[in-house]
Structures are given as C-alpha cells and as structure tokens.
Length: 214
Image 1 (tube, rainbow, N blue to C red):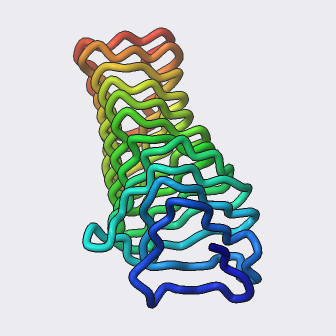
Image 2: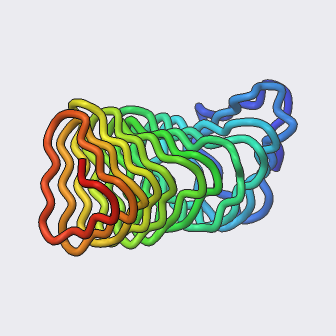
C-alpha cells in the first residue's frame, strides 16, 4: 500500500502493515496515520511519518523495518518499535506521547514525552526534555534540557544535563558528563573522561571517573 499526493489517513483506525507501506511518494513531507502495527516494512523516502494516536486497541507494536532518510513522529498515544529500523531521520516523541524502543533506530531521537529504551539502541544523538528511561541500552550522546533521564546498565557517549534537569546513571558507562542540574553516578558506573559540574549537584556513589571530577 502506498500514500501519494497529500496522503493522510489519520481519521482511519490505522495501518496493519505486514507487507510494504510506502509513503515516499506523498507530496506532503509529513504524511500522517492514526496508528501503526505489524511486521512489514515502511518506506519513508525523505518524508516524516506522523502517528497521531498510536493505541493498543488497534495495535501499536511495529516489529518490521522502517527505511529512508525521513523520520517518525509519535504525536499521540504509545508506539513500540521492536525491529532494527534503518531510517536516518529524527524520531520525535511529542509531549504527552510515549515510545517504547526494545528495537533500534539509526538516527537522532528527540523526546518531550515518555520514552523507554529497554535493550534497544539509538544510532544518533538523544535530546530529552520529558521522561527517558534506558536499561541495557546503547546510546550515543545524550542531552537532557529538562525532565528526567534514568540510565541503568547502559552504554552512552557524552552526557549533558542542563539546569533544572535530572540525570541518574546506575551501572553502564559514558565517555564524559557535564552537569548544571542534578546528576548521580552510582552502581559501578564508569565515566572514561571528565565529569564537569558547571552548577547544580553531582553525587558519586561507587562510580569510576577517568578524568578530573570538576
């Protein structure tokens, strides 16, 4: 099935995709549907697909593969991505929406909603202003501008925590950490580079720091 032209079926119940769902031909750069589930493939092309109300009543677990240079926006509801997605655009989770990621995405992640990464991975940078939890996950650089990020046994790159944000790490590792809010490193967490506290509070409890602490 393919969307072309303005390509919106957001008023429908959603798309069950066990074949090929192609939105690359849509004249709208942001084609939208209500919900997505299935084990097929999504061809984004350069477009960003928006899910307006991902919901379990219809089905909200997509175990297939989305590809292209475009992205995916969860604007409402809760979506689960459990496959190895190869699209390189931004995955956006809007305020009030939720994403579960036991699978992987290749590009950046921007979340103002609730995001859970359990065993999954983010290929690009992550920006959080909502609630982010990651366990046994792989991240690259993480920037928390607000809200709370909690990482457990997670491998990450450079961590940046802004004023008013909270970042907690237990176990796992990071390459560096810069804090202006509230940060705690515990449970055998290892930071190979510098931990820089520009303001706020950093608590170390059983963590190993490779570079200067601040």
